[in-house]
Length: 141
Image 1 (cartoon, rainbow, N blue to C red):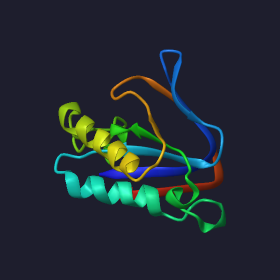
Image 2 (tube, helix red, strand yellow; image 1 turned 60 degrees about the horizontal axis):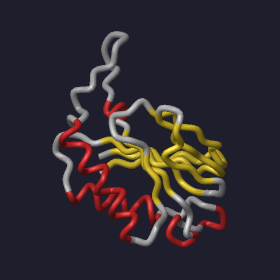
Image 3 (cartoon, rainbow, N blue to C red; image 1 turned 45 degrees about the vertical axis):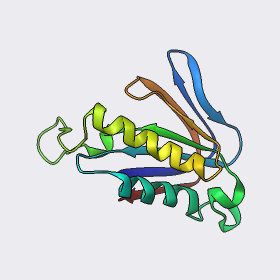
Image 4 (tube, rainbow, N blue to C red; image 1 turned 90 degrees about the horizontal axis):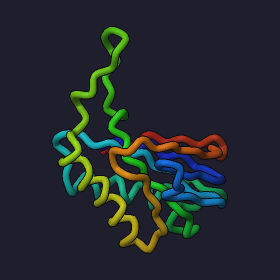
């Protein structure tokens, strides 16, 4: 499992013209990708890192600050562009494998008492954010 965390001062996800998630204060946008052999251990590690990394102002974590999180599924994190001009997606898990694991990350964050918004799995999403810092962290579990 991979995640790209971006500290943002505001962020939103829009699908078919409707906003599915947004925040207007410092929080984290988490792009989450799943590979074939991911499972509960990877879900727990990624959720713990999203909640506990001290990347907000004052060296606070999302959990410390009660900051909002938006989780967006992102199979393209597993793109392989080493050859040619067209990436392959062989390392990305198919939807029936990936969707429940992304949902499990969201539920693990909510179980920690966090406010978590999402996109819609597999949809054409428009993601907007103001990267604050900029701070972008890449995680692998």
